[in-house]
Length: 183
Image (cartoon, rainbow, N blue to C red; front, side, top):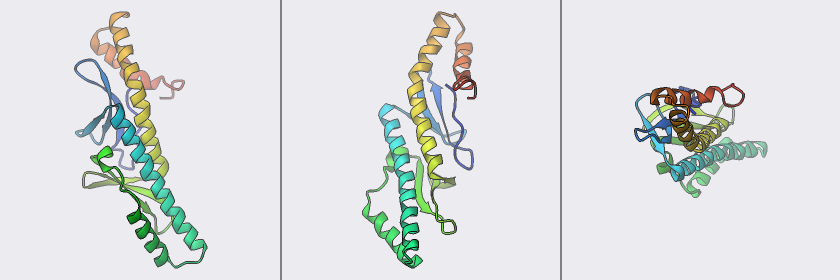
């Protein structure tokens, strides 16, 4: 099914169906041209859930700040509330998304929630909550497609009798035809 559109501001993170040497396809998150992570079914579900969790935390934190401001409470009170609330919640499942790291934040200027996006210790950009949810949805979409990609490749090689390279290219081009060719 090929790759999905990068969703972070640096353009460095994308999800795609990758072909393994044994002819199977896997869902893979690519963090740059040299670093990626293959996700099996359970890992992909944990990954997507954790990304959603982080997005919801950022929105929730922003709502707390906005509500406290509307109540006329000082900014310092809202900041303390965020500190206390964050310390009272379970931590994000960092292992589920590693080497990706997501830190829920609230913009001091605009009051909106966002996520700092890190790969390992390197800050690579920011996602708004919708960007994060799009990324999680892309993981699930590719996960759903990997078996379909493998079956299509086998069909092209056996029934249509394309060679392996042409069959692989055809599977890679499928994204250009999904959704009426808008891929």
